[in-house]
Amino acid sequence: MSTPTYDPARWTVSLGGRLLTGFVAETWINIKPNSPAFTYHPGARGKGARARNRDTSVQITLTLLQTSDDNDVLQAMYDLDQLLGTGIKELVVKELDGPTQFVGEVWVREPPPLERGVEIGGNPWVLECAEPSVYKIGGITQ
Image 1 (cartoon, rainbow, N blue to C red):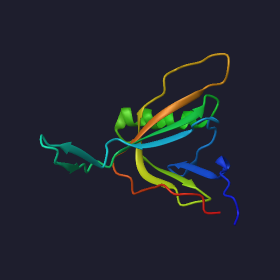
Image 2: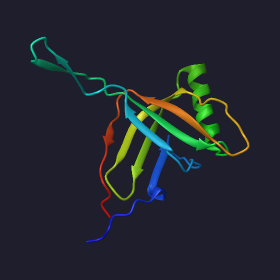
Image 3: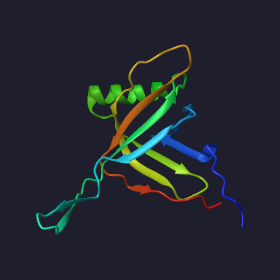
Image 4: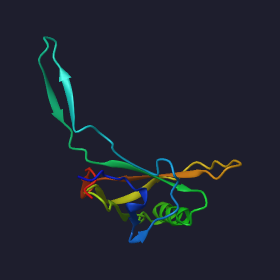
C-alpha cells in the first residue's frame, strides 16, 4: 500500500476556459457554503426540529500573487459586470489526484483591497456562485 502524497501543483483552476496561474503559496483557494444545509431549532422541553436550508450558494476566494497577470482577468470580469451585468464565467477547480472538484458559474463579488508592502503579497478575489453544478470533496486516490 502506498502513502498518499498531496501535491499543490496537481490542481487546475480555470475561469471561462482560461487556466489561472500565479497563486500564493499559502491558502490560495477557499470555497465555502454561504449557509448551513440544516439549522437545528431546540424546543422549550428539549425536543427540537431541524430546518432544511435550500440555499446552495457558495463564496470562493482565489488569492493571486500581486504579480499574476490573472489579476487583470478578474478585474476585467468585475468591470464588465459593473458596466453591463455580464461578468459571469464558469469556474472549474479540479484536483488531478482525486475526486475533489468544483464547477459553477461565478461572478466577482468584490475586488481585493489594495495592500502593498516591501514583500510581494496576495490579492484575495472574492467570487460567488448561486448554484454550483459540482461541489465534491474527496481524498487522494493515487
